Length: 324
Image 1 (tube, helix red, strand yellow):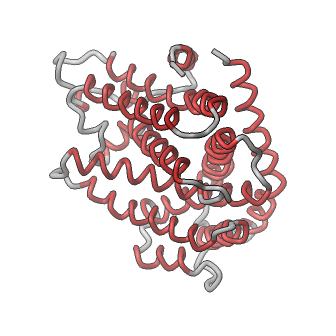
Image 2: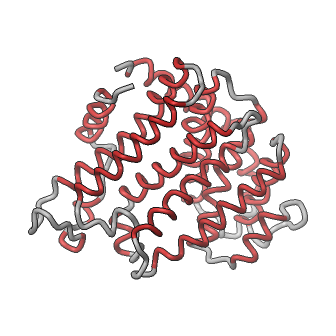
């Protein structure tokens, strides 16, 4: 299973990133927050320190380095930490703060020319500048950020109940894939094979996120692969097919076999979370064996808590049964 080595490797990567955040990122955030106007609240900070700014470098960035058999440089760590943090801020500008599309695009295009109207915009601009200063291809990074924002705009179609399955699938793939390519733009040696692999991984992670967000999206009338599925066998088969396609793309690439196997082991622990979530949904008692109706279930029924020991053990079970 290689679990002890994987556990050590992943926890070491997370520890290194936590120390980096503590030493290099939190000090300037604390300085900016001394004059916080209320636009940047504790959950916003947590997204940076506990999620985007932590997991994107430690999981995704480390996976890229495993595949390429090298270490992450200081410039790359700064850049991928910044791009990860920017992603969470962009989501908030789009979904929660309801800034105009034109103004968000202006923030992306002109990070050095404006100061920002409030604290969260100033933090966004600071991270944008940090990413660009540490990128070997700043123009490509800005272009990638714009593509991420374009997929956000397109995702508004998911509140239209007439949207069809093909469009939902395409939006899911583009939204996740372009986000991961944006993170990947932090690295100097991006190649076509890496882009294909990480685009598929990003698409799969968006699919997985939608599984975990099924209750929230249902409440907000957002149409995803999870909320529109009436047959859970189809949903699980679809998820498994995306996993299989990703594995095949990795195996067929020209990276060293040792690195490909290590890469798949590293990302599989994350992929298996989606399989645990699907199991929970499939095992829910329902009025029809063949038809899945979200309105029959409560929040507790639909939310998969990976902190529960039983779910953690199921994740380990799925990981142990992966074939490399």
